[in-house]
Length: 279
Image 1 (cartoon, rainbow, N blue to C red):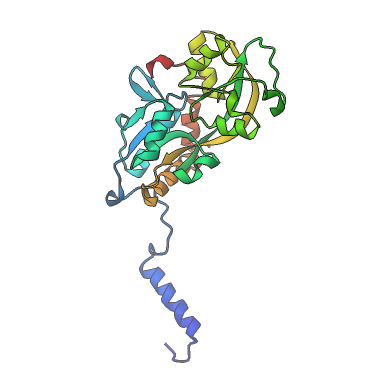
Image 2: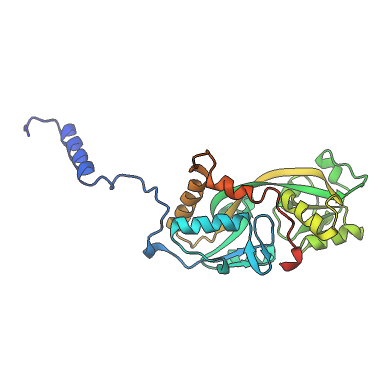
C-alpha cells in the first residue's frame, strides 16, 4: 500500500476489511430467538377478558394467548399456558407492579402506566365505551352529558383516566370487581352506565343476560393500544426479542398475502360466547 494514501482512505480500507472478514459484526440483530443465557423465568398474569384471554373448562384460551404461543416459539422461551394466571384485574396488576420477572396482559397502554412497565405491542387496539340498558332514555352526546350519571367501573380500569379527563367526578364512580357486578348494579338502579372494552363487553352481555341486545353502547371513549406489560427488572434483551417476534407475526405473510397475526385474529372475529363463571 502506498505511504501517500490519505488517512481517510486507510480508515475506510480497515472498515471494509472488517466487514468482509466478520460480516455479522455490524449487522443488526433481527432474530427474535433469545439466547439461552438471556432467558428469564417469567410469571404471567391476565384477567378474564375474552376474546383476548379467558378460561374455558379450566384451559387458558384467547387471541392474546395464541399470540403468546407464537412468540414463545419464535423466541425459544418455551412459555407454557400453565404459566399464565387468570385472576381479577386488580390482583394481577398489583402483582405485576410489585413482583419481579412478571408480565401482565392484555394491558391498555395509557400515560399513567407508561413509566411503570416495559412494553411489547400493540397486540391490538380497543375502544372503551359506556353501556346503558336497552331502551334507556339516557343520551350522551358530549362529556357534559355525563355530569349527572352514576358510572360503574372495574377498579383500576383504564377507562377511569379517560372519564376523569372528560370531567367526570370521583363521586360519580361506583367500583366493581367484574362485569357481572356491573350488570347487576345497573339492573338494581345503583348505576346508570358502565364502562368497559366494547368487544369484551358485548361478549359478556350475551353470556350473562342471555340477550345480546339487553345493553347498548351510548358513548364511545378513546381507542387505546393493548400491550404486554413487563416489570421493569426484565431485561431489554427479552423485551426486544418479544417485540421482534410480534412484529414478525404481523409482517410475514403467506402465499395469499395473509399474515400469521391476521390468521389468529380471524379465529376470534365472531366466536361463540364463553362463560364468565369459569374465571
